[in-house]
Every structure is written in C-alpha cells, then in structure tokens.
Image (tube, rainbow, N blue to C red):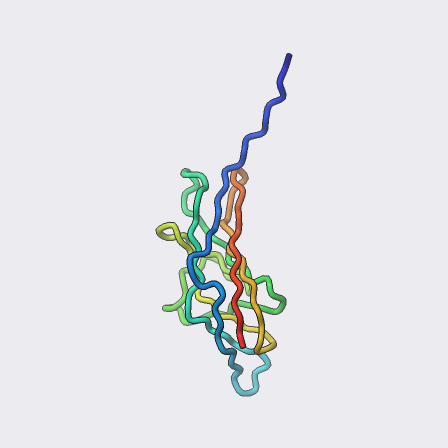
Length: 138
C-alpha cells in the first residue's frame, strides 16, 4: 500500500504589535495645501516571531490600507533605514527582532482612521502572519 506524501508544513513567521497601536494625533494642513499631515508621536513597532533560522536578514512591509493614505518622506535622521518606499508602503529591516516606522501620514481629510498592516516579507517556505495597527488623526 502506497501512502501519499504530505506536503511540508510551512514555517510561520509572525508580526506581533509591541507599541504604537490605538494612538491619536492632530492633523495639520499648510496654507494653500489640499492635504493634511499627521505625525504620530509613538513609532509603530512589531516583534517578529518564528520563521526560518536560515532566512538571513528579515524585512517587514508596513502598508497603509486606508484609501488615499501615503507615507511622505520625513527628516532623514528621524526615519528608519527604509529599503523601499512606495507611497503607501515602507519596507524596513528587522533589528534585534523588531521592526518599526514613524507614522507620518498624508490624507485629504483631517479626521481619518488609518489601518496600517505590518507583514513580514517571507519566502516560499514560510507563511507570514501580519499585525494590524489602527491610528486616528483628528
């Protein structure tokens, strides 16, 4: 009797919220600007658990899923060393098991609830589990 081979179980790598969730900040618009900027005081921080030990340098993709939300460039000294920046997405390296960004966002309205997803960048042998932040400008 032949037994069917079971596919390998993927290794799970998980992002877990450490700090920065549920914070609120005031939105401001410069004179003549149609966009509001909000700088949140606490960085959004996730801890990375699991994953393959041989993965090498781990990356986390922070993505703002709220329509119209973007991460504008900020002061180079204040921003983490992002490896990619594409409007709604920042990819940063994990250092000491954690990844973080400063939540500095731009939107068309002053009062917005933002949803930001932090997802470990995985390879084909891993399954990534994302963490979600909810932050509010007013």
